[in-house]
Image (cartoon, rainbow, N blue to C red; front, side, top):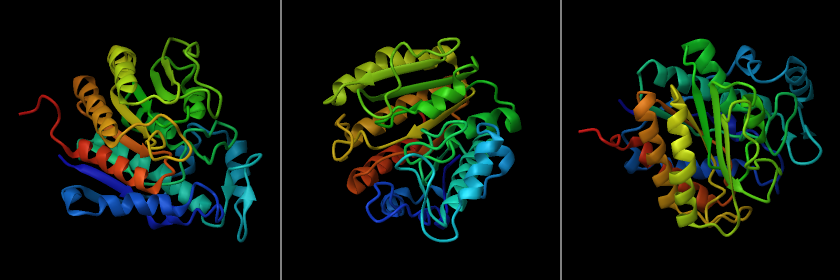
Length: 315
């Protein structure tokens, strides 16, 4: 079985402004990195449009109507107090993000692919049920998890988030459901100010590992080996979703955790090993943050290269 890569030109049409960090150039950098001979064996698919039914598994009807009503025919509109912006192409872009994540779940759940990477934007993990936040409109990772349950009968779903920012939206969506797991390693103190160790959910189904800057590879890997990976194994997911942010990269202008490309490759392989143990290898990865074009390109390439490699223990 192969690795699928979902993307769509519509995701380039979310244009929040000339100086906004969440620019179309981010996705272009990822696509250029992945459209090289090293990734020839991956299969590319157009991201379908998501559906309102899928979005409503996480977001409230009032909020979805608010987003639809604010979608501009020209110019820009703010969805929150400062940095989440809608342009004329944003609504289709975010629905392609949702569609990609749900289609990826369908493909790995059916055995059509071993894993999948969604090269889409904007990111989603800050979006809460009833509000946009931190460049995020709809939370495609959380939506994919609930889609896996509703459409594919996968009851225990985990999201592992290695973006430099804590995914407050995903945490809030999973907090009260013991069959959903959210794990995050993130810089702290830092935006959005959530993700403390004592935030553990209704059944210790939330695991937060705040990391101070500068962190570096050794501290990151030790934290994953000693805390996060054992917690994931105890949870034993039927599907593992990765919120793959690359703003912890040492080149990133916003973050300060100093991860390397090898770190992103390593954690991907470790997460695949967990999925091999309890989820038949099913992994869906969704692009989140990353604001150095060079770091985003090389980090995402290391991540997808790991997804394409033979599973640990296979022969």
